[in-house]
Image (cartoon, rainbow, N blue to C red; front, top):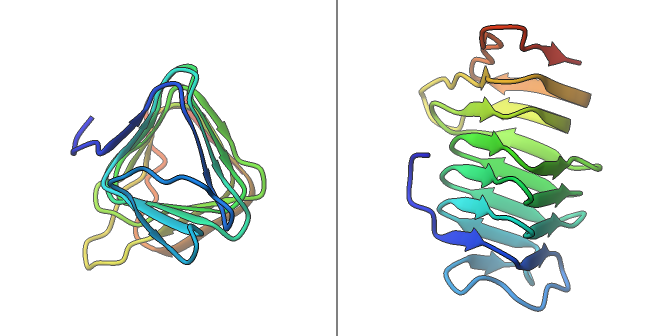
Length: 157
């Protein structure tokens, strides 16, 4: 995994919402904790992160869900690095926006809403490493969504 991980949650729970009582000490919170930004995020065994409705989690580097870790997304997750899911990603009603350069989706993931939206001048290529599902909306705003990955991997819409 590339990049610096500022927050590694091993058994811990984090709720990002208007009423969140706690934020990681290095994270930047705004709007009464409706927004949190971190350089990288690794969710460890028995850890759970919930992004509540109307809340936004921005990860400037790689986001990794390790075996036994969980993210519940009812809000918005903005990613600027590799998305690696080896644990549980509960898509609920949320949206994931990939906006970095060289983004890669690793590990089978079911997204409710997925958006590819490059904010710079370089296109990204979100390459499938395993079966990926988008249950609701796939939005290609700007960038390249490369669905090659080899083997029998597929994109299910």
